[in-house]
Length: 312
Ligand SMILES: O=C(O)c1[nH]c(=O)[nH]c(=O)c1I
Image 1 (cartoon, helix red, strand yellow):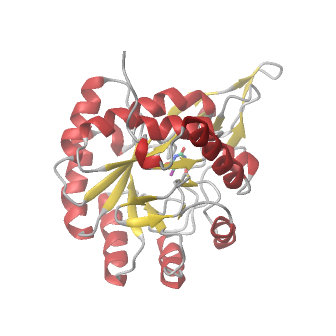
Image 2 (cartoon, rainbow, N blue to C red):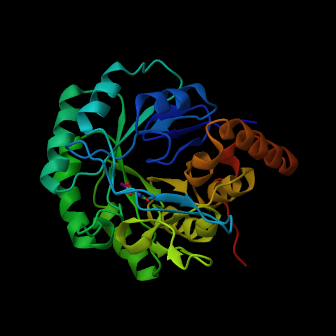
C-alpha cells in the first residue's frame, strides 16, 4: 500500500513524523529520526535565544497509561542552531525538514523568519501559536485577533507555503473564527492540530502531590486521552479550509488512531507521547499496523480514504 503524502509541496514517503518538541531538540535526536521509519521530521520550537526551559520534573507519562503531561517551558538551542542544521541538511534526502518557530514576541518571530527567508532553504516553516507552558505568556492560539495580526505580518514575509501549530478548540464558533483567519492567507498551506490540551493537572494519590514541578503542576496533556479532541479539530479544519491541508497529531499510539486521523482529514500524522515513550523504532511498528488496516479494508493509498469519515 502507498502511505506517501505531500505537505506544502514537499513529498513524504510516508505520512508519519514526530510531533514538534519530541525527539528533536538536538542534532543527535534529529539524526535518529532521519535514520528511523518516519516520513519526515520537525525541529523543537525555537526561540530567538537559547532557553533552559522549566525546572524538572517537567514531563511524565501518566500512571494511568492514558497519556502524558508536560510543562517543558520551551527549552531549545536558540533559532540559529536550527538554522545551521537547516543549512547542513541534505535536501536530496527522501525526508523533508520542517522547522518550528515559537518566538516570545512578534518581533522575535519576525527576526527568526527573516533569517530563514534570507537563507532561502527548502525547509518548511511552521509557526507555533500554541505553547501553553511559558509562565506569563498566554498562547496566541487563544487570542484569535492577535494570531490574525501576527499572520498579517508573517505570511507576507515567509512568502513560501508554511504552516501553523494550533491548540485544541472546544467550541464550534472558535473553529469558525480560526478558519476565517486562516483562510485569509494564501500561503498558509496547512495547520497542525492539535498541540497539547493546555494546563491539565496530574496528582499522585499516595503523595498527594502534583506530578510535575513547574506552574504548580499545570501542564499540557497528550497521548491517547486527547485522541477524540484531536480528531474533532482535524475534521473541523478539514471541513473549513478548502485548498489547505491539516496535519493530525494527538492520541496516535498505533496504526488504528493514525487511520482515524487520516479518515478525519489528516494529510500527515505526527506522534508525540508514544514516540517519547517508545523511541523512533515506533515508526516501523505503526507503519506496519496502518498498512495492515488498509489491506484489510482494501485501500491502496491514504488518498482513497482521507477525509472520508461518514456521518449518520
Ligand atoms: O513546554 C513546551 O516546550 C511545549 N509543550 C507543549 O506541549 N507544546 C508546545 O508547543 C511547547 I513550546
